[in-house]
Image (cartoon, rainbow, N blue to C red):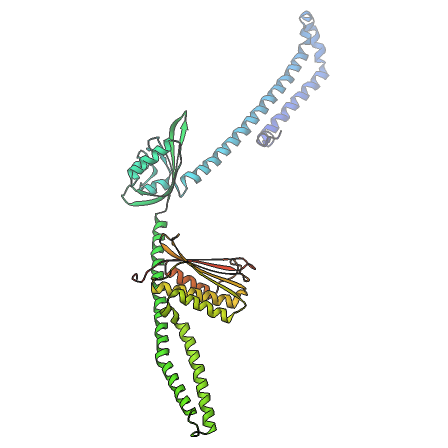
Amino acid sequence: MNFPHLSHLFWMRPAWRRDLLIVFAITLATYALSIKFELSEKLVPFTRAFEKYQIDELPMVLIVMLLSMIWFSWRRLKEVGIELSRRIALETELEKSERQYRLLFVENFSGNLLASPNGTLRLSNPAMARILGCASPEQAVGRSLEEFYAQRELWRTHLRLLHDGKRVELDQLQLINAAGAPVTVMAKMMANFSMGEVTELHVYLTDITELKSMEQKLADTLAQNRQLSRQQIMLQEEERKSMARELHDELGQYLNAIKLDAVFIRNQIGNVTADVHSSADSIVEISTRIYDVVRGMMRKLRPVALDELGLTSALEHMVQSWRERLPLIDFTVRIETSLEGFSESLNITLYRLVQEALTNVAKHAQASKVNVALGRPGPGGLGAECVLLSISDDGVGVDLPEQKLGLGIVGMRERVEALGGEFDIESVPGRGLCLKISIPVTLEDQP
């Protein structure tokens, strides 16, 4: 058995080594003198008279006794060493526990306290004192937890639960500190029992007042950003609508006039030369092509079908045009309910979402099937009546954690979030992609 503390105690001290050498020297000297002067023989005359009492055996007994005492002392010394090592280990562990206690209790950023069964504070760390608005833990001791509850009845409910042996865990609890200021905390409470009775309450609090304030500011900022995005999108749509109207009313009329004049010139049989007739045909053809381009631009700027036929017919017309352009892809449209009465912002957002999604399918998906589903099932996860849009394909898909989304997807998300909706993408490489969109319903008379 190794005792490092004993090794240091005995063998590392010069004075103890010196004394031990002296003991050995005296022993050797005694032995030498006994040999030189035959001390044992000289003792025989003195012990012979007491032979019947076995006095002559006494020297040997004393020697054995001396050795036994040495063994006994060694055993006691060994025990002392063990006890000393144990106590040193206990003191080291105690110091470690004290450091851990200070770290976990005193230096902890979360508030910890021990309270009596009725909620009177017995022990508090500095963080708890700060949460409760006290200058020091000593000022918090002796006060009741009920004083700091914004709702006193809620404290009585919590106290009953604790006495029933239940734990109380709250993501948010409203308190009033000693200065009268509101404090929002996360709370965890439990009770210790002995012989079936509550002996003390353990309470842990984390101050989240600033976090809640930041969350509220962030929510307000997000709401403002969504409102600005919504206004920007609506202004953009209004500008597109105005440009489409200008193209139709101004440029369209001029092109028709040019075409009619060219047709009139071409039909003057016998009055024009062959060159003039050929030029008139070219003018008619070019003006027709320009008009087709202008009509395409007008459809992109503002879908005429949306204004004239409504959302359902506009979507079906759009999908039909994609069928004609991509005959190898099987397009399926399922509209489960009436979409009439939606606000203009919701109508144009749904139309643009489908338009952008089908454009992405045509460019990137390499799909053979595309499904478009639109429904209005009722209240959804957003707490209001929602319209649900789902667009899926069986194309190559994307690795969402790895692949950066394009501007088209980002623009779709911004449109949805501007109306307070939710935008979700599901995709597995080689197994297609699915867009799931939920937007609260706004009607025509709503802003």
